[in-house]
Image 1 (tube, rainbow, N blue to C red):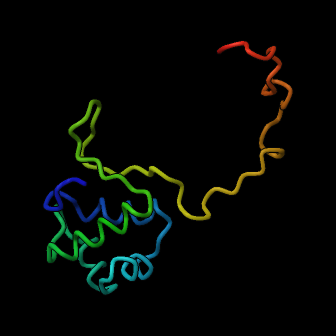
Image 2 (image 1 turned 90 degrees about the vertical axis):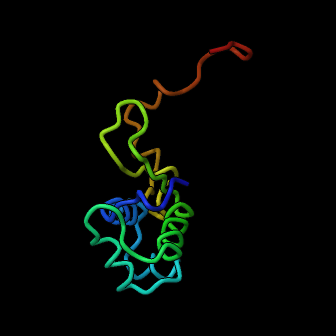
Length: 115
């Protein structure tokens, strides 16, 4: 987990939406009040709030599959968030409806053929 003093309010808000959580649900998961979470998300720049509350919210978001990006990687555009795991219930795919040309995706290689 990155240092909490560099998490921005916009990152928290974006992470919450990306994880498919409402403010009340995230606040409950982090054991903070919804008004506290709203104030944290509304912070300009770095999150303002008690460190233990910020840590609790960040951990709840990480448990929901969110990774916080600080911009110290190649091609960075600044701080951000990434979904490592799909949000609960957000992906409901019936592959028979999605794949238009199924024969192209079927494996026709002989057994033992690599690649």
